[in-house]
Image (cartoon, rainbow, N blue to C red; front, side, top):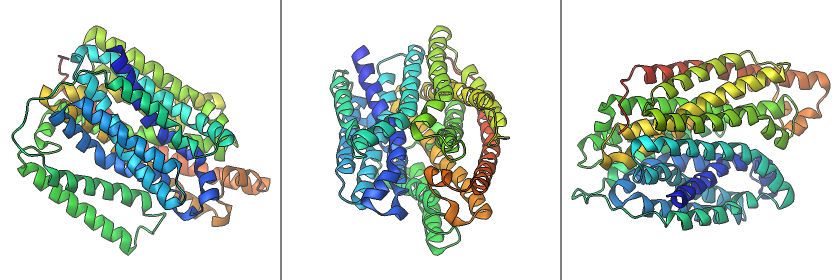
Length: 473
């Protein structure tokens, strides 16, 4: 079991690392491959396919077993990494990132499903802490490793470097016993999966591109919006009628499952917003380089790691889970309230304390909500339940990052001329008075984003505290 757990953790680390390491390399990539207007898609393409593919991987695990599906997801991830790392042009790089994201979505969902099929629910709490540790280490290692790798070997190794890590994960995962679920006579609902993937992919596309690639009030936005609504409605109708749906609507009639999935969505919006935009504040406003900004994120990542491990141990010891996401969501509210009055002159100690509170809240909630979702369903739905909670968190992150980014970008467009919005290095070279105006405008946009996140954290807290706790099996 330790080797299998190690394989799942290594795979999860590789998949999580690619979401944070690529951001540091984007300026270098744009300079070498060109296509500055498409550089945002290097990040968005992976997020889009990751969100759309996650429930499909989870359903496959319930039909075929998690081990072969996790190995397949690792293979897809490696293929995408190789395409991205050897890309001769921006289009190839974006394609590779899309394939990489599809594999990463499977890894994120199936790592939990693999352990869930081998470990009783109560003992599973010990492993949720390790999953949180893997995610936290990848989050802080991404900016640091990205800065070092780009400087030493070039941006391509941000993608090629995860290939040997994924290969090690595959070797360890193969040691897991292959437990074939009870065969189902109903066919896989491929049509429902395609409709669901199209609707979710269109939503992420709309949130990522509208307002940047094209205006919100334009015919591309309207067409994508109509497509999302149409595909979403068709997916709901199909899932209600299908004999074996990809994301069974009956599960959402279970209060514990619905609350865990809903809270995961809200948690993802708040969590990814902090991970993405606080490093930008440290670089754009505080003037730190990428490596220093990554180090200054340690209070948030460190408390997230510690809280994940400690929470997992307490769940094992007590068999109780509800108190941890409840306290975690309350901590998220407190951390956001601390960050809402952020200014360029905010004390570094206050900023570190606020990030530490955010990290602790995330660590107590994120993996326990996956555990709660799985515990609320039967053994035949473990894969789809875990993937649903992971998928909700990823989708929440996509929505949060896009929405908060839109708030910040709107504030920048309203407060500054476009020629002042450059890289952190370019902003640092501006005259002092002009640079101060940029700092104030960016920080005011960040304040609005944190204020907008407070109601989301409150809703997550409400979702958790209002549901009846189900004892861990």
